[in-house]
Length: 411
Image 1 (cartoon, rainbow, N blue to C red):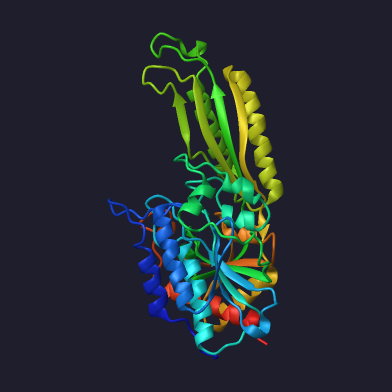
Image 2 (cartoon, one colour; image 1 turned 60 degrees about the vertical axis):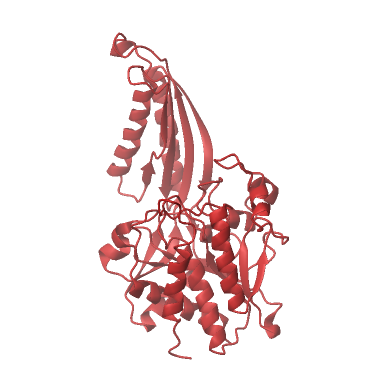
C-alpha cells in the first residue's frame, strides 16, 4: 500500500459531472442552498456515496454524511473529511466540490485497497457554506459545531423570501439526526486556494496553519436629500460623500499597514438613487479580515472612531449593525505537520499559509483538531466560471489527503 494513489479518472470525472449539475438557461452554474438545482447535486453525491458502499446520514440542517464504519471500529470517533457543494451565482466547478469529491475518493480508494482503518472515516457535505441564499455563510458547519441553534438556522429567510427549513423538507433533505451527532476525532478539508499565493510562488501545495478572522458590519449613513444643482457643497449633508470617505479611509489604512489586514466594501446602495439628487441615505457593508484577533479588534476600533468623527464633520447620522463576527482560527499543529510530511514524501514543494477566506474547517475546529490543504488557483480566481486548477494539482492534493488520512487511521 506504499504507493497507493487515488483513481484519477474517477475523481476528475465526478468533479466535471457535478460541475454540470445546476446549469441555468444561460449556462451558468447556480446551485444555491436548498434550491431545486442543489437538490440535483445532493442526489448525485448521495448516489456516489451509496455506490461506494457507505452509509448515508443526513442531519436536521441538511448536512450529508457518507460514513465508512468497519464493524470492528464502529464505536470510535470518526476522522471527518469534507466541504460543500452549494455554489455562488455563476460559479466555477471547484470551490467546495473538490474537497467533497476528494474526500469520497479517498475513502473509496482505501476501501478498495483492503485497508482497515482504526476508526470510521466520514465525508461531509455541509449546507449553505456560501451564504448566498441564506445568512450566515458556513451555516451547516456552524450549526453542527454548536455555534448557531438548529431552530434559528431552519427559520432563516432567504433572499427570495423562502424559509430554509421548509425548503430542505421540500427537496427531501430535512434529516432526523441532530447536528453534531457524529463528534469527529479530527477534521481535514481539501480546497482550492481561491487566491494567488501558491501559483505566484510556485508551490503545488499549501499546508494551511490558520484562517483569518472575519468582521462583517452594515453601515447606514443618513443625511438630507436636496437638489444637486442648487445646494452649495458647504451646505450639504451628503450621505454618499460620507460613504466615499469611509471607503477611502479603509483602503488607505490597509495600504499603509505592514500587516495582512484587508478591508472591503462589497455592497452599497444610495437613496433616493437619482442622478440629480444628493443622497439622503447610504447603506453599505464593511468586511474586515486579519489572522490576528488583536489586530482585527484594533481595526474595528479604528473604524468606529472614524465613523464618530465623520458624523460630526459631515453632520450626518451613522448607525452600525453587526452582521457576522468570527475569530481567527489556528489549525492543529499535528495535522499541519502531517500534511507537510506527506507532501515531502511525494516530492511536492509546499509552504505553510493562511486562509484568507472562510471555510467549514473554521467551524469544525470548534469541535475537533482541524486543518486544511490548499492547491493552487490559476490567477487567484474563484467564485467565477474562470476558476481553474490543473488536473495535476487536483490529483496531487487528493493524494496528499489520502496519505494523511491513511497515516491518521492506521494501526
